[in-house]
Length: 106
Image 1 (cartoon, rainbow, N blue to C red):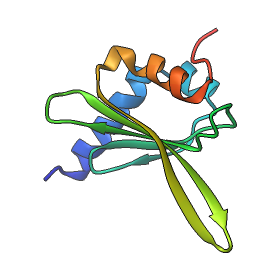
Image 2: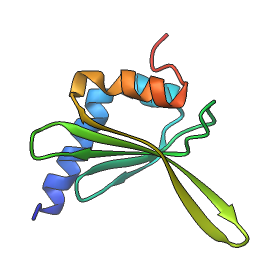
Image 3: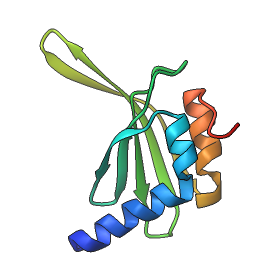
Image 4: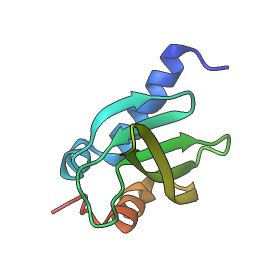
């Protein structure tokens, strides 16, 4: 079990590895510390992704989940659009670009 400080440090590390510029370019907001990583909401994109979840695995790799959250008849419906496992930290931007259609650098 991780302490709240460890969880926060993991989320900060993920955000640093992606980069502040890349997060700004994808319109990231509502960054949320989770038990295993980081969850964030992204801006409009061609793939209709609304949220990205980054989970740190015991192997020091990431599982990145792309999902869409919509309100349907008063209830929220969450649809998983893609899941990419065994992602190295230096491939995070590429995975984001491929699954959202948004660029992470100029």
